[in-house]
Amino acid sequence: MAELKTFLTPPFRANFTNTLFDADSMDGGPMKYGVMAIWYPERFTESHKKLWAAINAELDAVCLAAFKKKWADLPGNFKKGIRPGEEKAAMGDAFKDAVFANITTKLVPGVVDLAKGSDGKPIPISKKAGNTEEVYSGCWMRATITIYTYDNKGKGVALGLMNAQKLKDGPRLDYRGDAAADFAEAEEDQDFLDQLEGADDDEIPF
Image (cartoon, rainbow, N blue to C red; front, side, top):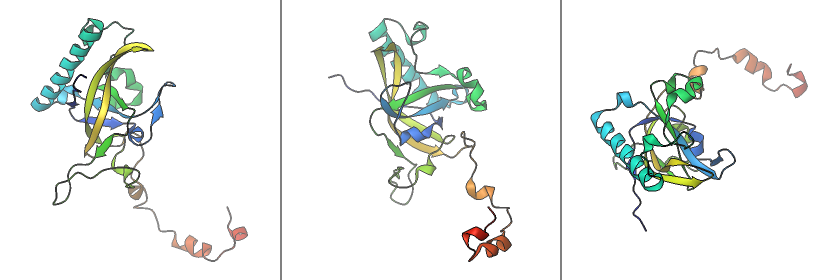
């Protein structure tokens, strides 16, 4: 059995993070976990460029082995895994000067935060832990991935998700603001609350 190659991605804006915890079916296919990764290659540091180069080299290698063509030279009817952000321009500025990929897996991925506390161990983020709000569409993440080709219902190359790590908060891409901030300046409505205190249901005007 061939050795499974894994690659660390450069940091990306995470989108559709709910599927990290709830498997979903895309186009009627199998249920998968995953996340949409949005990268900004023009902003990569030198270390990020090296990670990206390794990913691109593997894309070429697997495509040459399976299809006798380099990744960039795949025909238009092949799915290429990493796509230009212009395809999602209607979804907002997050896709400007970007490339993106849906990174998926049939297995539950590990999702961790940066190391916290004196022991330096990462903190798992899960529904069971009750802290999935730490990971949301718009935060910055990185992931470990595999790269593979397929030739069944269509042909192409895809990025498989192994594990993911939250790196930093960022503006939400789901456009939902912070709940506490929404009501920070609102009046307390204490007079109204006093009226409700002890009132019967039929006395409440709505």
